[in-house]
Image (tube, rainbow, N blue to C red):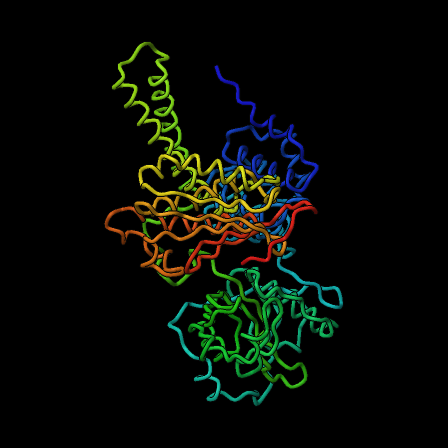
Length: 566
């Protein structure tokens, strides 16, 4: 009989720090979401208590990892109460009974109920319960206090076309202002002659209307938000004039967007936008492709509503939002045979268990735990143990890469001295150096030089770089490894072996499978893993012409000197 106390262990951990709260959040949601632990009320309340101290990015990553894990109703409620980016992955695929859905609907925010309305596989009783909330989930307050209905139209996606080819043939101002009847029960709005939109409710339209309302009622003087030019951008708001030229942007850099005419040059759109311009109608989830290498470049999904001058009825342009498309909304073909990070982690678990068992039995035979064994068997057992040790290291590399991709890598802050770390890595590589008949020269830098970071991750990163260099070295070759500090960083340079000469600079990242002797196979994966892991640790890996230079945050005493070497 086995007793699993994983949940109690996590609940007993220190959650007072931000790092402890994030680690507990990941572990608790994983245990409960995958039904490896019961949705204990104490655990759910603990998750609610630490949620404010867990970044939205981390909560959203946890939600995505549990999207197809069939989490219980208690955890679904917890995620559904959160922000749309956190709630959407779970709400879209959660499999609950009608009674469970109906019990949590009154406690959910309108955005979560709106996301739930897009599902077509809900029980009939859940659909009736959603309908009972009426128009309260689809309204924005007017200045007078009465609600205004908000809906959107979804157009059929047509081939990419240019708005510029349509607009010149269309007069900018209409001869007679159009008058549109307001929906039943809503007050007439003579100042908004746009055609009544059709189709199901869209969150993007709601965001666009809120932004437009704030601008039209005193928000025009507010300064634009400061956008980090090097950070990821997942959405932005925009306005165009009557010709389709973007005149205002909030949430993205202005340079690549302001003055761009939709449908021409660097901003290609599809037929949804073109058709909407003809009819001066709303559109939702249209395609936009921005060329270039700026943070705003790439694919976007556009949703916007037309704007008209209240006095003359003159069409003045569009106001809307753009967001990055989901994987299932992208136009390019989905790569086949490309396992997800979650599938890779599951595969790693399936491989690690039997490999550890093989290594353990080989060690028992080598140590004659089960009784005397001939020397030939013991030598074979030692070889098997050595090979399984290398295999486990490779499995750990795949697991680390999957965790980085899934934003689930747990790093513990610490101080790692470089000198003993380099010596230990060199001792582990002695069998490989004997096989390659090469030598490693190590200069560990000034005494006390240390790295601020997770000890296990730093050790794996440095040993991986050294193993790549030694594995590609030739007979009699000497690989120089030097450490120093500069500008608050600890730097470790690994000299490139002669076998890398045919691939100068970062061409090493593309040599996978090109080496006929097999000495360089896996080098590209190892370098990409090292670069990603260095980024997770707050540093970088530079692949130069002569050496591989690792830069990580230094943890130096005041007495340690700073060298100025490059």
